[in-house]
Length: 77
Image 1 (cartoon, helix red, strand yellow):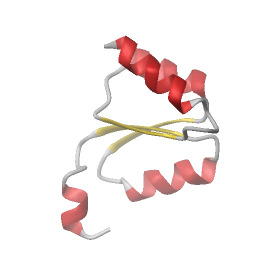
Image 2: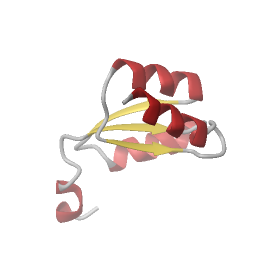
Image 3: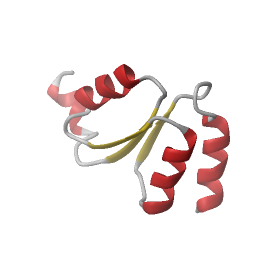
Image 4: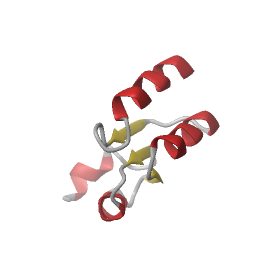
């Protein structure tokens, strides 16, 4: 990614949830200037959400019950 495109993401804490390890690794590589925390499943993501705050979340809607997880994040506020 060009430098200008990544500046906006610098130092953000981002939760990335996907059940495919290669997807998680690719996103971590692309967002190297951010604090990227990953989870492979709904339970792992919910645990992360209960323990810290995130600036952004990237959710695999189908593979890890992303819509349900999104509803949980709203109820955690």
